[in-house]
Image (cartoon, rainbow, N blue to C red; front, side):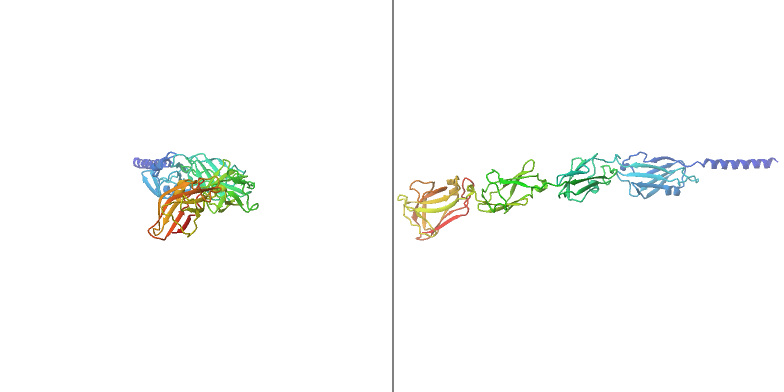
Length: 472
């Protein structure tokens, strides 16, 4: 009887041990640790996600229960195990300034079939900060009625933003072409339109959630505001005068031609409304074209129109300002160019008898006598022509060595013998004194010339070269 009892007792002991072993493995598995364990992590130090479990896991089910998402995109990758630790490495690695979420569903089981008691999840960010940017101010204000046809749209941010992301996020409707101007730290941007707003049109500005700060944090929600351009007062020309106020120009409706304009006159143009920056260069034009120098007053209602070179005497110009056209001729008295009125010749100064020289006339010579050539030059009132300017422009050429000229000198306003004819109003006389002798050949031509280098004290040049050829 003792043997069966011993066998029974041994069976009870074996059954109890098996039951105790199964009882020891009935506890559900837990995640003991995970990595990355901090909310923010450097992308350079983040190479994989790790989950350490409290028990040996059924690997296939655990891997199927695992997911890693970047922003809202599920990532594919490879699994490894180190004892009870799962390691997941995404195929494309971890990006900078990205939000990641790790999730392990409750379908994960340990080697004994025990399921995770509940879903396990955590998140981390591969950047320095997670605070999204904010728009703290904008102009024009929401609903504002503006009065400038190209007013800038100005937006101020709470922190530096990515300029590239702003271009993706910004829109203006109806669309206008324009340029962007940023401050040094990218916390403010100005959109400056290159086209005019339309009066009464509502313009809608959107800055969308595509906008990011330098850490990749996005704007929390779209920002919208609208503005309109009010009815514009009609631009009007209040006056167009010479800069010194001497003359007021009249447009074509009132006068066919404005006269008395000097070659170096500048004009003063006054308008009723300030002129927008984009319109200032195209507001005024001159034909024939001359290089312009346009200077605006501080309030941009008045401008000075000057020129980098003198206008041409006798030429008619058309000045266009807005819809007005002003025609004027350069014929002011101070702009009158010098003009040679005649050349007279005295073969013998002691006799003082002058004769006018004309084209191809015969030049009589008294050998050894002192001869005089008088150039009469008319010029602008109150202007002067100096001896140096005359000498620079003068040339005499002798053909066929038909004449010898010696002891050449030039005198302004000669007295003896007196010029004949004498100097008229606004006329000066330059006398060329010399000794003439017959040349090696009995005949030929002598040519007297004054080039356009001849100019008066007002800067007026001889309008065309003077040339006179006589026979010998």
